[in-house]
Length: 265
Image (cartoon, rainbow, N blue to C red; front, top):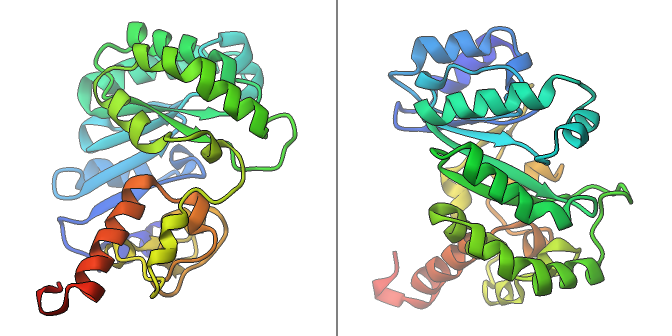
């Protein structure tokens, strides 16, 4: 996205709007960090980054960093750079001192067994980190796709020990998002969505996602999955790809709006 288009989009919304910048990698956009520095006091920027390069931390309200291993050799091989791990660790330490910073660990077949060591590493290395969060690999590379047996074993043997290591917000977020083994494999996580006969996603009324060309979509989760939403409707992908708290929100609003009668919102 060019700076002019970005600025035009920003100007459509109020200063209270959260501007969440995701990947590709934001630090590769040559004008972006200068823009953030210039407007950081008046606008609320949230940024996802691999943090190979430092970011303007004091101008960012929240920073989410991808880090999929605590083993320097493994991580450097994964990202094809001999200096990546040291750079990222140093930058996370710096960022966590200056803004609300979390680290996301993407669970795959190859790193499931190392999740506990990863949390121990982050607890020790980043004492001021806001949270460690977990996401699930959603591609089709057989080296990374998690099988049902692997997911069941992870929840049976690893999760109980993992929860002992998670602290504060990290513990809360894990319980909220990683609620059952079925999330790690393909399948329907939320059969209760059948209760929502109108198939409306109420949360998406407050969200807009813009592609690099400025195309507008209602849902960032679906956009991530290459599904463009021009209306706030629930799709089959929502049965698997959404978060538990958002499903609960939609269900509760549905009950108030459709079933609440005169008391509806």
